[in-house]
Length: 170
Image: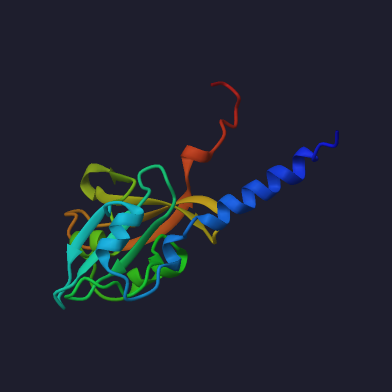
């Protein structure tokens, strides 16, 4: 009796499984938001848009490193789904005025909210987990100033959740 080698059978099964999965970014523009919800679940965050549509965000925060967003028109058809926790997308924070509401509507809820600095210069910081340059486990720290009303600066940094204890003490 002849048996099939296990490794090729497992690889073929894995490829068949992957081929059967639909990526959220491959959903074509014009698809209804209801179909998106049916296929990928309820969005993590949504907000109304000025054109009468809605922005929908599916986020893996606080522990994941990805989030995807789409805008719908008034009829509930999507424009296309894009990843939002990327260096290229965060670079848009350089332009214009960013309030906490606008930040939430663009990127979704952050992984962490904190305050940093001495009491006289304490600033509110929202941190988003993501992969810097698509590789490095990082947090994008977005500073909202002392009053928490407007983005003042942002920068990436290493994500301590993925850092090994360097001293081997714990």
